[in-house]
Image (cartoon, rainbow, N blue to C red; front, side):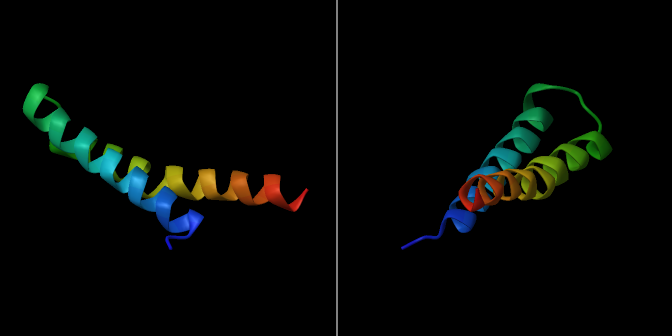
Length: 59
């Protein structure tokens, strides 16, 4: 069984990769911006969501 944290991380990782690849193919964005999107969506956003969910369950 997959834990909630792992599910959130996998979901955001897949979304980040899709956004980065789609942004490269569809738009003419720079590689630096696409790497920033990948890091934000794949690393920062899951931490924020997991922290929010943990705070909701502890109340």
